[in-house]
Length: 150
Image (cartoon, rainbow, N blue to C red; front, side, top):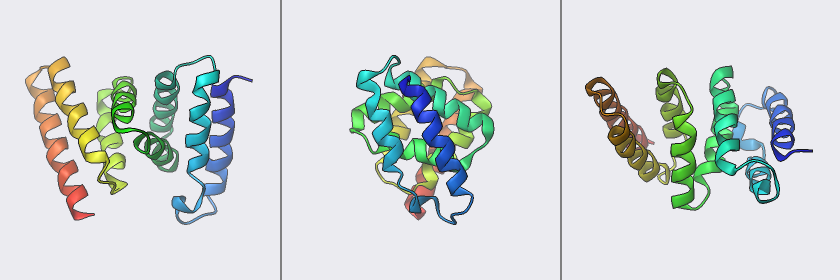
């Protein structure tokens, strides 16, 4: 079985379990991270798997699944987590970026700050329209405020 299929099956189980659990942190979130680590022996790159998982979670508007995936990414080495986050965000429609960033910030994890700021800084260089830069600056300010308040 392909690694991606295994991850989807586990996420489906976690999703079912989360409906009967008040706090998603009570479920072993490391389970998802461990499965993503299997990337070394599967047919897709980790960045591609992360993109697919995040895109699906956003499409489903599944807050629990999105938080588990984000946490599994930010728990990795900083440089690798940043690259994966950047890569994954590039695959999400612009209208969904705010949703993703809000969930990212809601984790209240200070390790998320440099990844978020670095991503937004790079994203501005890639897409230099005035409107988008304004949006990203406001996202950054809001994200920092949320994390400082957490």
